[in-house]
Length: 134
Image 1 (tube, rainbow, N blue to C red):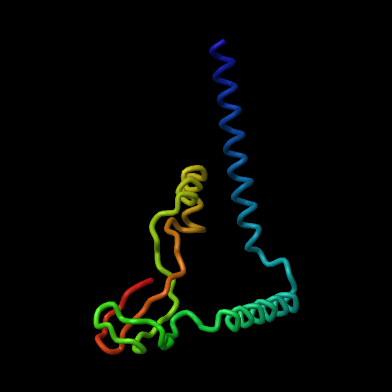
Image 2 (tube, rainbow, N blue to C red; image 1 turned 90 degrees about the vertical axis):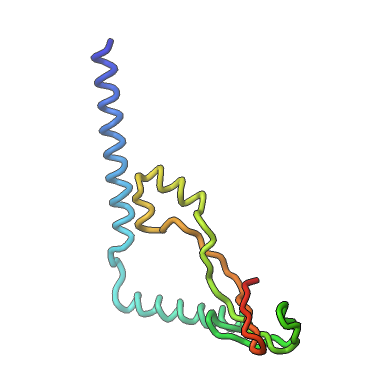
């Protein structure tokens, strides 16, 4: 009885190792080039067009400060002197990524990292120099 249990656990262990190897190969195969250079160039152009269209919809790019005349500085109470810009800010540890890291034995940390990022707005007053994040 004990011998059968030992063999069963061994087989399950080997299956888990094989499953891990196949999962790793599947991830690695995604990064191999399978397209011709012409297809890659066409895909690159499509992505650039999509990015430009998105930037036009949003109206501003990350990192470029724009004057927002409607905002009032909370420090000096001046109106019309506040510049805003979009930033990506780390927001702590993502629960989903931490769970994936535990399930994959840390392999997902290499691909995705552990922290999550949020789209925020940074404001700066040109009158008093105060900066804050909304």
